[in-house]
Image (spheres, rainbow, N blue to C red):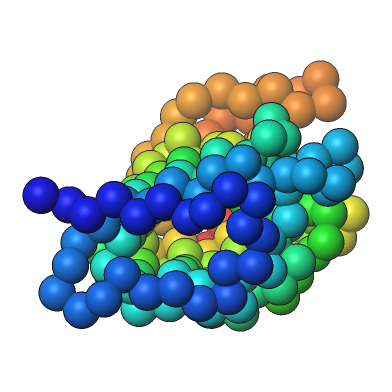
Length: 190
């Protein structure tokens, strides 16, 4: 049985909490929002909050419908080898924190939705990442400069095999790679 860890109401500084060695778990971070909710999502100071933990599912239940903002990052989910799902939108399109190693070592990650503005997204170890998640990142990118989404070779192969038709600015593109390119986004293999 998985332990379920619930973070206290209105807790926005989760710079470090660990489930403990030998335990699997799920966490639900509830009622995040407050003053920042109207600006596009709850803001959390994350630090290395989930670094090397063995959570399988992280669900952030914010009072904002637009996901949660991270104003401090840096290895947040690094080495979370059992993490399969992050069940809310990670907003990098507002505060634009540095996210260079946040998903390194996330070997089991299948599901994460990220909105970005100018930050590259690196998911080099997540071979199970769903194509839907890559499509979400491309659909919701509000980049004004070129960005790169780096994927594990297996996840990248799913992108190469995609033949879905996407419409952007009145044009139709076949496959996620062509669609991303039209939005000045490079999808690369790690």
